[in-house]
Length: 144
Image (cartoon, rainbow, N blue to C red):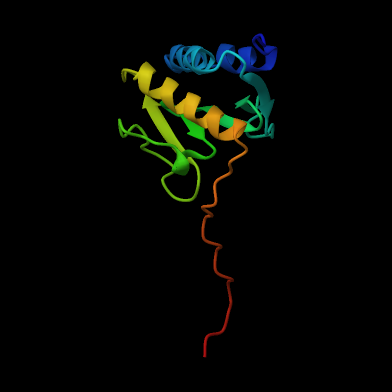
């Protein structure tokens, strides 16, 4: 069983308000959904020097992102995951799906855990989403 990643610890620790509790709880739920999931940090940039917490098992399963007033868990192949509890409420276009947890909202641990498990199973089976976001139209294109 992989242990916690110090860089992910830094993201949680740097979040100084109620979002820290949400991040820690979601991290716990993700690991409960798959004890073999591996934590990493990716996409560091000047506007986000700590990066994003990424959870992988045969590929990226989900990403935790602290946003203003909320925490987002984004599932890379979310459009292909069953969501009987209708938890997805963000990033509803393209292949990814996300759940935004505003400060003060109750987390449906069983629902999130089920999504993590299904995401991991898709990765284990080698399945990838075939849904693609539409390409943006070229600017300055002359129509006739």
